[in-house]
Image (cartoon, rainbow, N blue to C red; front, side, top):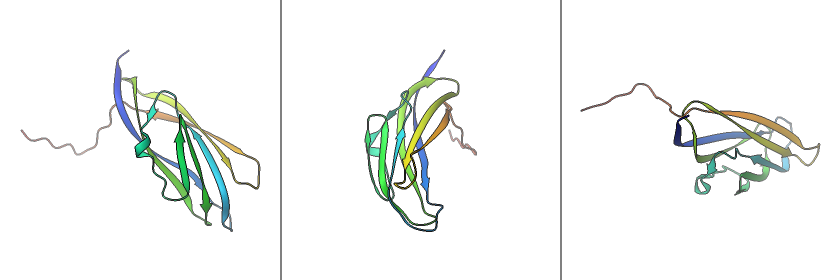
Length: 121
């Protein structure tokens, strides 16, 4: 099996407040796939506060009604030359109900082509 080194940019839409009131003190922990190494300096939160510890993203903040939080991060790793499926898990606590667990499968393709492709000799 051929292996390729690649860097992937992830945009995780972690939380959205579908309620009618502001949520205070929501927290989320996202467990990242072991096969990829997070590039700490690329972690970005548009609001709230958070940090990266090992393979986990920790975030805490408040959300207005209808507001969503997305987290961006680049990860690097060596994967198979064919598409690889990795799993990621998020645990969300809103301080009112019980913790919720979300499981997601990530399909990583070793190459991505963007058209149109223009080359000049």
